Image (tube, rainbow, N blue to C red; front, side, top):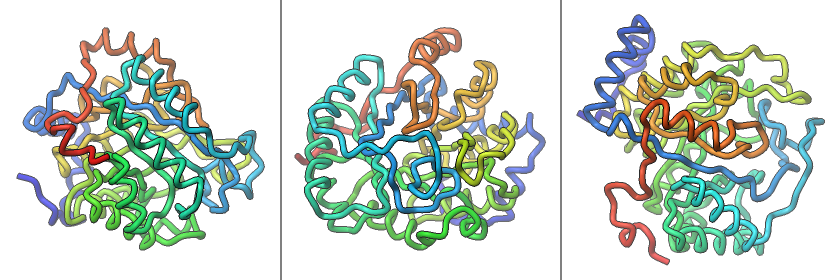
Length: 327
């Protein structure tokens, strides 16, 4: 049964289950609701890089930090369409475009993004954007252009949030998710572990996601990739067991969501990634970069799919594309 009334105590009990029992339970739930051999391949492209006015402590794109990220203005529409075509030919069925903005502004750049959305949508791919805060009117424009999903991560718990970001509030993030849902766009929202938070913060973030009026259709689980020049540059690597606990708990409490094994995968072995798939992850990001951080090569992922007998999930599975794309 799909529940949106989980308590923190219930989620904590699941999260702290002995690890092998937790994996077994999550794998069982996963098989009840999904094809366990099926993994969606997504590509994330930074269409506007760096120069962001926010102070997210993990992000090398913040203008106030001194990192190796070079600032690039918004890409041209046809260049983005070309990158989407390359991703599709490499096996991706979902294409996400990220812009290092605090919020979407109603200007020429947003008009260009709408053109990008139309172009990628017409290729038959699920098209996703992550552009910062969004009004309900802007969400409706993106929907009309053919946007399938919008990513806006909570990052962590409400209690720990202020230790990571001060330039926007937790409520701001939740309001953007409400605007996305109101426009009937698929919601993609998850977070990052390894930023110095405690287990209660991880449980708190999962509790917030699992008690939204509707579960996000997509829940990315990211392991921090420390970047020199950011406040979190010295954080220790997250262990695979911490990732497995997050993925397994997310799978049990949000059984139909796509649980995405996201940032940090480049530092995981094939065996560690296999454990994450067993625990309920059913999506990865392909390509050499996740916005500005390293990611496994496409060839490595193709080999992994062969070894683990995984198959790519098709775009718009279970839905008629005509019912999604209105452009």
